[in-house]
Image 1 (cartoon, rainbow, N blue to C red):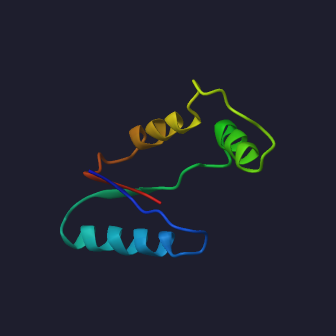
Image 2 (tube, rainbow, N blue to C red):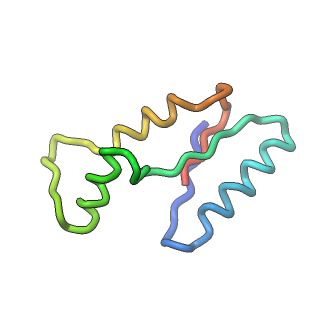
Length: 84
C-alpha cells in the first residue's frame, strides 16, 4: 500500500505522516516514510533546478522515476509506504 500526503509548504505533511505511521504501528503494520524529492541526490538537485526555472526536461524524460528506487530501498519490508 502506498499513501501519498500532499499539500502546500508548511501545511503539516510531515506531522500527518508521522501521526499516520504511529497509528499504523499500533495496528502492527510496518510502515516507512519517504520524502520526495530528496534534494541531496543528483536527480533531486536537477529537480530543484527545474522547479526554480533554471532547467528543463524533455517530454520523454521522467525525473520522478527515481522515487521507485527510494521505495525499493525500504528496510524491513514495510506493508505501507507513506510518501510526504
